[in-house]
Amino acid sequence: MSFRQEIRTLLKIVPLLVAVSCSGAHPKTTAPAVDEALRGGIEPESAEVQAEQPLPSLEELQQLAATDPEQALIQMDRRLAATPEDGPLLVLFGNTTLALFQRKQDAGQLGPGLAADLLADAKEAFSLAQKRDTEKAQAEAGFVRCQLLAGEVDAAWQTALQLFATITPALEQGEEVDSSLLLSVGKAGLAAASQAKQAQQPEPASIHLATTSLETAWQQGEFSAALPLADLWSWLGQQERAAKTLVRALQLQPNNLQLYQRLQNIGPSVRNLQVDLLTELCQQHPGQAMPLWYLGEALYLQGRAARDAADTLKALACWDLAEDTFQQAMALEPAYANTCEEWLFYVRTQRGWTLRDEGRIDDAAATFVSVLESAPERLEPNPDAQSLHLGIDAITADYYRQGNLKEARQFLRKVCAIYDGNSDWTNNLGFFCRDLGTEALAAGNEELAQQLFQESWDAYSRSVELAPDDARIVNDRALIAVYYLEEHLDLAEQELHRAIELGEQSLSQMGPDVPQSEHEYYDMAVGDAWENLAYLYLNRYQEIGDAETYIQNSLKHFPFNQRGGIPPLRKKLEELRKRNP
Image (tube, rainbow, N blue to C red; front, side, top):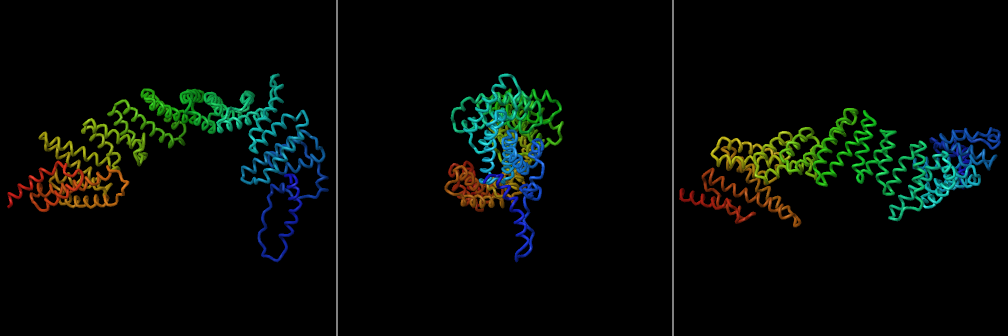
């Protein structure tokens, strides 16, 4: 049953459905609404009444098809019944049927049966129209659309080649050809090229005719030809031509989001050209924020590519230009503020990494601190590659490897003053302060040493707040009091016992697949806590207590007999035994 027959059948049965719904022994409910589109927005009329109505003109049918394709098809049926060989009307019928197909498909209302009926009706109309020379080209274009909608890509391309042959005489004479015909050839070629590329097959024969058709449509002023032309060039591996086509279109519509998105996809293979084209676009459209935004993104990606190629000078230039570009875009369009600020965070972070690549550790450190200060809320929760988080970790490690504890301390003091919610950073700050304190103590500067030890205690205390169940951090905070301060000894003793409990609990919960390094981390923490308890009693309390047991327990943990602090503790234990026999 064709679609036209289906509509007529519905028109006949609607009165019967209404009559049945008003009778019968059942509770009265609201009747299902009849689709106004299927009814054409009017009550069904008898054949006699329809016959008395004047036939609509072709122009009237064209206008109706644009707003109500289903009603238009009903009216076209009436006109075709009177003039079955009307070529323009047959083409209009076919195109209107395909428009209805697309509308139903977009609305999710296109079942397999209806789809087949619609395509069959359209093909029938185009077949009849094709017999008339004046409508041959339009009919062939209609066939191309039918075949593409049916997924018959190869057949569509063959039909498109026939269509191109039909319009060739006009093209050769320099006449303007209907852009819809040129678009049909181009879109069929695009589908054929993408299918061949995905199947890793050679490009279709005569595919240049598709690019010629789209270029011709574009030259005739058909803006919609730009996107399929760029896509076709891209599928054919002509990325530079694709990018230039898109930017030519953007020169006409500098705020066309779809064109920018296509340019983004093409970008990686022609990044430098993309930057050059967008720079030219911004110059041609001063005061437009969207071109600037996309130029900033392209500059960022260009900078990343330069960094990967170890071209740090070019990368740094990209970061400077990108930052300036995003600032301009944000000033022109306040609605862009959030995304521009996010991009600026990434750009500035990359600047810090690039400075580190050059070995300029102090400059990289200052940059990372500046980035963190400008947007602490954007700090990543995990130290992922290229992140600010990892950059701060990297600078900390660089200073430590250089033995530059003063710079490491100053760097982390600035970082933690801005953001003190990372236990690793506060822990490392405590560690650097402790080691600098021991250096000051060895140099005889006791006042400075005590300041540094107090700072170390404060930093470790914050670490314990952030990670209260980490045995290593709990032990390290207690160590500061045990060895270097004149206070907190009672708390330190309690915390050392707690560190032992936490460490043993962590060790007991580890499975066989846990890395050896992680096992050693907690095992050493437990051993250190036992050793620190022995030191507390022997050196700070000057008591033997359970010191010998503490020493023996310490040696049961990594690095076992290689613990350098044990011999002095044994010596101290013997002294106290002799002093108090």
